[in-house]
Amino acid sequence: MSSDIRFVPWQANITKEFFQAQFGDHLFAFVLINPEANLVHAGGETVRHLLQDKGVPRPVASTFEQIYQAISDPFGRVVHGQAPADIDGTFCIDESARPHVKTIQRECSLGSCKK
Image (cartoon, rainbow, N blue to C red; front, side, top):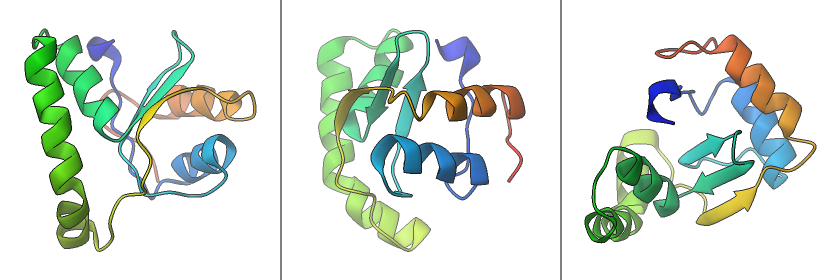
């Protein structure tokens, strides 16, 4: 998975469309979309999955997940001007969000994404 990670800005139109289709709102959230597994990880789950994908042992990744949950609100307020949405967990990609995932894959390179 990590060899194909794309960082997509929260403000990008394709991000807005994905969040609207997946969660019913344009949330400010840290998510990891895994189209191959048909899953979206949100919040601390994103941190844990990213670290485990890099080979970090589960107990260490779980600790960082807990740290994320403790600091994400103040960090989001200071850096982005708002706290992330209170959404944490792993969800199946909603059928209405799937076309937006394909758009993200098509329009975003490994290092950047058009706004």
